[in-house]
Image (tube, rainbow over all chains, first blue to last red; front, side, top):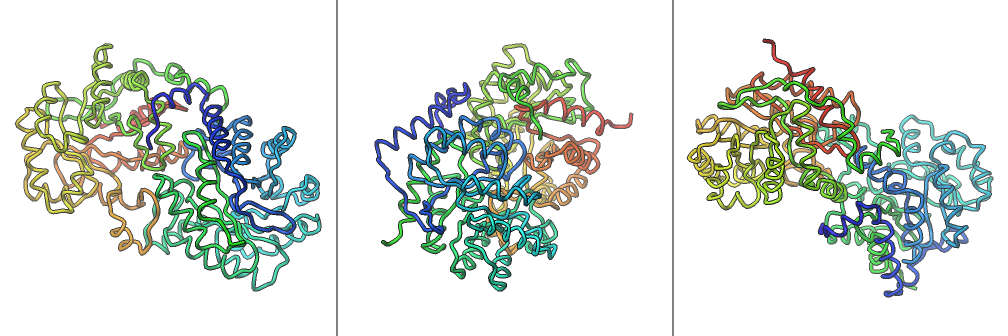
Length: 309
Length: 300
């Protein structure tokens, strides 16, 4: 990655966000990107690129060092600037986990004139306290989604009735019902039971394997850290194509492992849009610290995610 | 990791290093490398060059932070914490940073890895030797590649040039078989640099071994056990590196201590470890030195 010394010095002085994002805006105006291709989610038109929230919360899925870097840089102003940049590049929806910070950010985004729709993932208190569901629903998200890590855990522990209970509560609240997962077998289970839900969030990588499960799949060997296996996306995409429900595919860039070169990023976007259904979208977390990720990702979605009218 | 806003700001302005305790600590336990006394903890240089062995963005963060000033600060802090040796790879910027440190009065001993242009320009060996490093080492990634390609004669030629230059001769590798090969052929060298993880495997080698391909750099759990076996078999000193799996084993103080303990429990008393440090958010230099002081003292 070639980043000029000058750019780095500006960044070090805390100006990176302002400058990088200002460039985004300018570039966006010059290129007049217009809207991105969309899909239908109930009564909503959702851009096929949805901005995620992991980098905003410092969830790098690599190590604590990178988490701290992300948290240090991603203050609320930069989150807001990133959202604005996404909107200017044609993204119309933000998916985030439930937390005081994200809820505060979406309120401020709207107050400042932003129009992003949003999807809420049941992280934090919402994961434990189902009584919060109606309260969140009153904020008018497109939908509320059961958290993928928790889904996988409950699937492993044969506690899917808890997931079902959560989804029923979401249905009662009047917003759309979503279920997130990293394990493709969850979808097989849910489809076989004909659960009442509107869409899935489907991780391209089964990062919820236990060390024992990983050893079993890797010939008895255990790679250290979070393990993203090359063949995982194909396994999930098969399920995605089998269900008639819309799917929002996430971690299509393997939490940054597939972003070392522009070619790698392009290949990952192309794979995603060639292997999900035309009625599906992708969720991508963005950390525009060193480059204009919102524009890059939006351009790729425009190239590979266009659907026939 | 709960890092307060205040400590982040302090770190950002380089204050973390100033704040670190332990200025002027006694020298850490040492080993002999030729005529030199080398501390059993050597400061490595990958983070200085932005080689994080993970993600492009994290590499950028490292390169951004490691200005010449901060490189010198880290070296100074290392010496204050009782470390007396620095291992780095041959690059114009690295040589300039060392010179700057020396000009400022720093007197750390240094071990040079023959990476970058030195790999293909062996005439640089004699030039660099005049600057008096402890030794010059054949680069591990290049060694592994040459071993795979049946070109070990090129490695041997490099080592002969180093011998002729008068400094100590080192061979670095990520593959235990390379140490076995060099030992069987009784190569004329003084010490090894031995990576705990064989992350130079090709994608095909990984697929064959695992039946799957994990993305990114792959650090296999049992690799260190394979490398420490050959480390114990050779009588030559070994400088073990990547003992923290490029940060993967530094997530908690307990994991960090476990990794240091494993290393010192499994290498010889005449061996040392090389650890790259990135004290951007905490005093890694002081922490690592403290662990080595506690764990690696040899019985007198």
